[in-house]
Structure formats: structure tokens, C-alpha cells
Length: 254
Image 1 (cartoon, rainbow, N blue to C red):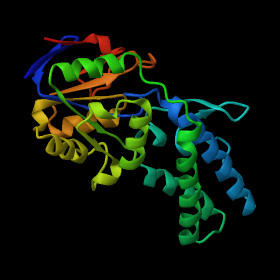
Image 2: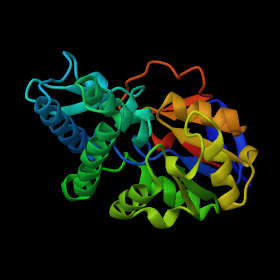
Image 3: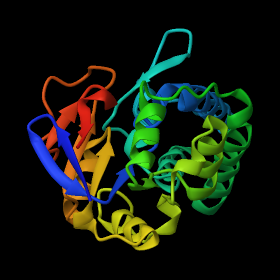
């Protein structure tokens, strides 16, 4: 086992589970373009039915939209940060349904809209790793820690994102929202990831940038919940976190 010192917290573990977006990669570097496309295409679909986006459309995905339509930040407690693809499609579907489109047709149109954005994402996104994450992953590997990704995104796209970043080889497993019955904040992802890497929840820590990550780890019985806030958006750690860090350099391995 490896002893980790994170601020005032110390624990011995055999593995680490990481959230993906905002934890391994800078969130907007991947999802900014995607959210802009989804919002523009959704607006077009609503206009076909004589409707329009609501007055404050950023709430649809949980993003902050500039006057020119660009998206440079997001709500870390919103749908894009914490929700599953299926949940976001449902939000968009409801808006189309409100314009008089039968639910089944609205589902089909919104699913196609989201799938088109997904298919074009890797071509347009300029994925930027969270500062210091690659050296940290290398340190973990040198110490023999097993690692897995637990993400609200689906498994297939997540594998592609990690491959594009050049870090897929560090992880023994990737668990997406589509791999479990209940996603974050429920414990299912942690339990499945631990099963796949041959560990128990009390033998790992969870590192993430959302309250959902922390609640998921705590519900599963993870040894430590580490909240990472590289962007300096939080003054104190969320109640469900054991400790907050700004950089991976704050995690010592003894």
C-alpha cells in the first residue's frame, strides 16, 4: 500500500479513481465547442416549431454564455458538469415538446442533434490536461497504484478523449455513466471500477471536481474524497469532500 498525504489528511491506499472532465482535462477545452454547437442547433430546432430559446438559455446545460454566443465557463453543479448524456438530451427534448412536438419525435430529433455534436467533438476540441496531471499519473504508476476513470460521460467517448490526450495507458479501467444503472452521486461507478481493478472501495481514494464525485465516493466507502479546484472557484471544500487541493503537487506519496 502507498501512504498518501493530502493537506491534513493521510491514508494508505492501493488505487485512485479519477473523474474525467475538470479533473484530468480542463473542462471547457473539451466541452466549450460542444456546448456552443448544441445550443445553436437547439435554437434552430425550436425556431422550426415557431419557438425560441428561453430568456436565460445557459441554464439548459449549465453554462455561461457570452453576448457573442461563446461559452468560456460553466456551472460546476449544473447538467453539463454533473449530468449524464441521457439527462441532457431529456432537458432539450422537453423544450421541443413544449413547442408541440410529440415526445417520441422530440426524443429522436434531440438524440440526433446530440449525436452529431459528439461525432464532431474530437475534430474541433483542443483538449488541455489539468496542470500537473500527467506527472502525477506517472508518479502513481511508479508507486504501483492502480488507477481508473469514473465519469458521467459515456464509456466510448471517454476512451477517445483519454486516447487523444495520450494518457489512456495509465488506467486499468474506464467506467462511464452507460456502464451502470445509477450514475453519480450514487456509488455504482466506484463499485464497478473497484471490481474491474481488483480492489475494495476502502482501498482507494476518489479525486473529482464536483459535489457529485464527492458524494459518489463517500456513498461507496472510499478512503478519501479529494476535491480539486484548479480554477480557484471555491473558497472552501464542499461538505462532502474530505480535503480540497488546487494542484496535484499537493498530494504527497510516502
